[in-house]
Image 1: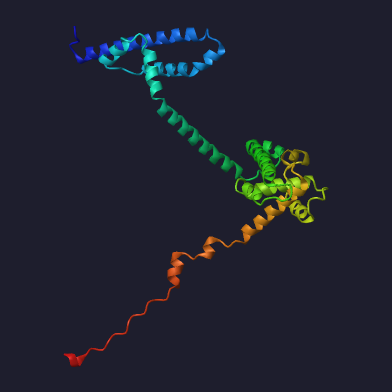
Image 2: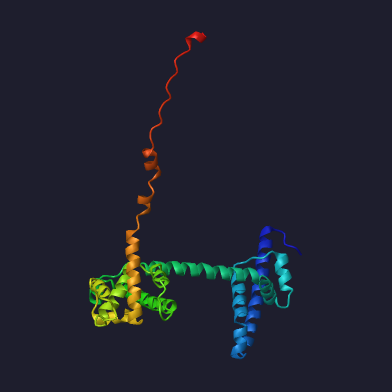
Amino acid sequence: MYPSSVKEVSILNQDLTTALYEAMAKEQANFRDWLVKQPPEEILNHTYEYTVREDILMAMEELELPREQAEALLSSPSPLADVYRHFSDLETGYMDLIRDSIESRAQEKAQEQQQLYQSPIYPHDGPYAREHGELEQYRTSRKVNFACKEAIEAAIRENFDGIHLNPDAVKSIVGKFSEERVSHVLANTIQQKDWDTRFSNSNRSWASAFPMFEPQDRRREYTVESHPAVLDGFVSLFRQEREAKREQPSQAAEKPSIREQLAARPAPQKPASRPKDREAR
């Protein structure tokens, strides 16, 4: 006997979908009972399958399938497994989505890290930060100081051949951290090791001009531990890079604006009027 109204059809569809959901839920419960009795390695092998089947069940809670579709799935001895196998056939699209998610999140994290590395130095010590409710800024600044110190050490390792230090060592750091941060970490290092004559007088004098906001023992955490002679060369290259950047004329000074170019052009002169040729009349 077929339903005689739209309302009865809707109720029948709901009943069939509910029956399908209950069959799938029972199937999943049996799958879970079997799975928990397996060795750990076998459980791990089926973790993805179990999770996807749980997601299918969650989606079924919100679906109302047409009667023909619900009946067709109910006719299967394992409707949940059937849907899971169909989903597995679409895994290529799923993996594309996973790869896109990885690349997108990696790009976001890189941008966040770049913003963090370019952030200004917190210009006070811990007690001041605690008193003024700025401990987060203080801790973040120390964290970036330490990251800068480690990056400098890695750049020196990768660009020193035992005799010469490649200038790319400095460029890789300046491109990642702010000039203020690199100066602070290098100046702190030389101040901590002011007794070491392997640092040139020029670099020690340069470093002594930088104010430090924490006690000396608190600054050891971001003291660069590369070989002093090589590090002195790094500091010199960094200072040269800074000076060269400051001496470069700005783009605006090199190239005048379009309006300035137009203003500098001489005004066009009107051609002289010709006398009328009266004889031609």
